Length: 202
Image (cartoon, rainbow, N blue to C red; front, side, top):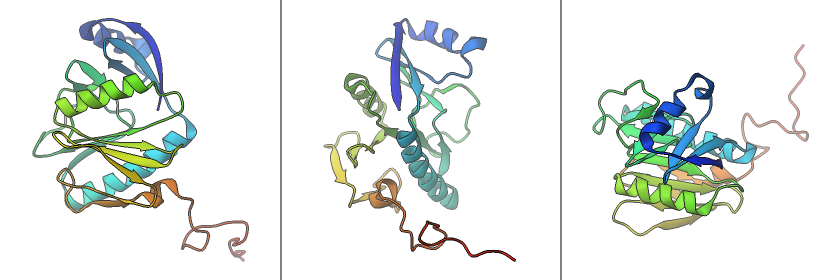
């Protein structure tokens, strides 16, 4: 996601600012004392959508918890974050609150990079997530790879040919990164292309 820095203020002032009528349709984060507006790019958005869909399907099938998309906010320490996707287990939070920024940090946060991401902002977010006990999956669609950050463990870097394992946060879940970063196979069922046009319907 693209991050645009606006100004500095306290967390309390930020929450009041974010809830103003004119700001309710804006995606606002509060990172390191600064307000940041989240604006999606096409490639980062589609990458996030793929990952969100795969996680949601797995979590729903196994009745593990709740998954939020790119407009679900969380209080992460002193920050207010809006990950591209997040998973909250029922064990961690049995009932989902209907609030702008969930006061409980998720089990898993998914972040997708775009060319305008500020490295320092992302570093601060990852540190905040880890301090809150949240695992982070970071996806870079422009230099296709993923990075896994887990509390108390060394980061893991995965190439576009690797398989991302759910580990302890999503046991049994696996995501081939070729599905995230690769182009669809034109010969695969349900995939249409100029070389394989659909049959005419009488």
